[in-house]
Length: 520
Image (cartoon, rainbow, N blue to C red; front, side, top):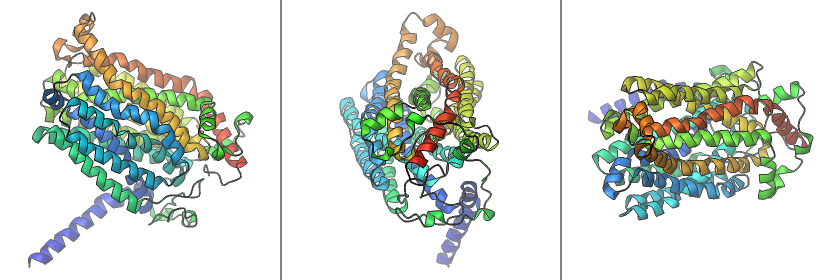
């Protein structure tokens, strides 16, 4: 009698999951096959984000166990990110030329192995050296994921798709704060590293088995309603008739390339490519940097991630000291605030797509600029206030802004780049992003120490109630807000005026290359 009961319970649980979770998600993204792609790519971003957040989550135990400071904690994040900055451009070139599934699997297995070694470290220097090898996932994830999204999904929906995918990055941060932080509290910081290593090995196996290589150049788009993904490089299944009638997925957003064609926006004739995929790496880099909007988006994205990295590394330390919270409580509170960022990426991507569908072709630029400025405005009273629930409310709104800017910026980058250069273009962008991410933790830690010890103590006391500020971190966060404000203003005052012609140039390059446009 026990076996049927267990079987019935298992069936009921599967039915509940199918009706309550899987089914609604499939309807939201347009089918099972599309959901599979989004989840797997989101998990890749989540893995790297979880690692970086874990360092922040276990910062206090690490400082006690190894006798290190905030600056040295920052260098642990910097080590892997700096290596990523150095090698992400070659990985971007690989993403344009090799099987992207195998590239991801190789990098994730390498990363997981190094996490095992890091957890076994017996000194700070051994841990620091082990993290140098973690740059593999950092380097491969950004260009490969962006390239795959460009080939799996059409332009008019990339904002919302990137919103779903980038939510994985934020869920990874939450995992690092909540799971790793509590594992460290219950067991040790070493166990936190080993838990992530196990997750990485599992993810590598799942990607190897379930994520195919899409046909390049716009031939691999997964149709709405598809139950299964096409085999590697298969173009026939990707051209299947879309079954939109059974899905609530919104197909009304206009593709930016079609809208640019209809409005007869002139491209930059000197930048139209006829054989861009055959460029050498350095020819490609020169061409990518010649696109004015892309240069602006590189700066904007790098500034946003610079601030986010500093915040992610020291948020729990700040909350613990400022409000006298236990490690587990601060970790859980940080996760709750991080839900605002998830809401932001899910909403902002849709808003940018919808604005384009309604004829506002610079909608993605407007959305991202407004999101950065919202984060700047909301963070300011949050750091100046000394009441936990008020600070938490402002941080929730600010997190929505800083997270919401990313899908709009990322989809705009795909809009203005010839598809044969997606991997290398993302490699160029990621090099700048990771370089700023690499210096963010030690720089935030250094600025915090200046406010704690230097002549700025008067401002420190006025802003964050003296020693309860978390070692000057509150003041450091306030000063660094200039980066978010600059990102928002660059988008609204500069990128809006260059974006559409650069989109037209990318579309013209697709036509001139002789293949089917990836923008269609």
